[in-house]
Image (tube, rainbow, N blue to C red):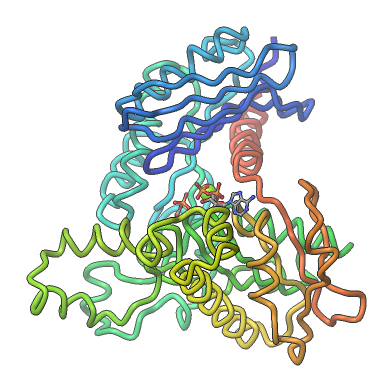
Length: 407
Ligand SMILES: Nc1ncnc2c1ncn2[C@@H]1O[C@H](COP(=O)(O)OP(=O)(O)O)[C@@H](O)[C@H]1O
Ligand SMILES: CC(=O)OP(=O)(O)O
Ligand SMILES: [Mg+2]
């Protein structure tokens, strides 16, 4: 039996998203999500997509990512799609931080594991979860290629003028301090899909991509190549996020140490987990923030305005970096669903050729679509991201090509 299926694991700090895809037919066989890992109220939502099985939603504590993956494996087995299947060709893992070294999808061996482990201090919310996913999957199927697809890979093309911080070169080099950028799989996929939507080749277009999920980042993509992105050494820099501050004056940190008597670890937690939208109004879900704004809640209004103000600054910055912009693409949970964010981010930018058509902006759809009016010089688009599909493609291409070479 030909092995044509890829299982993709996207481990976040407290979640595990997965998809099983047949790469020859293009069929998605199953998809799901484990949420709130480590809490009492964990939840596993599993959806078989072919074969007619029922979607299942299970609540109950799931202590860690390893337990989560074993529960997912059990759900897949119930649909006859277990990890023991001979049709499985590989398991593809999202790995958030790949440092400077990994520019391509990579078959995981001990050396790769070691490097991903070494990078934990610069991706403390993500790399540990990614490692557990890899180790658990390897234990379940030691014979299968496990492939890492790195969030940082797409950004390795950034010129040094964008990737270097203006700090002492010796210190920066010694500690490998530079801007790496994240969400690269999404920025790559969305910028390509945006070119397709315009009926052009990726080489022909300049795109600003706004990936607005729980984590959020912007990128400037010139002719298919990333030239700048808003996240830096870690996924903390740049836009206002669900729980992360994004850009702050670095002096805030030593001020809090000296005057606020906070430790480095406490400030780390403050900026990564208690800031952003949650820090501003106690809520990180954009739906809930909009609901509160509609009820006249001033705190929610200000949180929204700060979020949008930062977005606007990055749109302007990347417009200037690119010189000519063909499209501005919104993606991920907020970008795909929150019409008010899109409207507010582009408001007042008509002189830059940017505008949103209210009617087109209000359409709900899973399809990529243009929401700018006919006359606008720059296409504003909503382009749903699909990190799992992109990881599956890169994983399959890698194992398939090497299998071809061995034939
Ligand atoms: N219908 C919606 N309207 C506004 N915001 C939404 C909607 N659906 C999801 N979101 C936002 O998307 C966020 C999650 O985005 P997602 O890309 O799934 O995040 P991640 O992959 O980083 O966990 C939620 O926190 C929520 O704010
Ligand atoms: C890198 C990053 O911020 O990822 P996520 O949005 O999944 O937290
Ligand atoms: Mg995401």
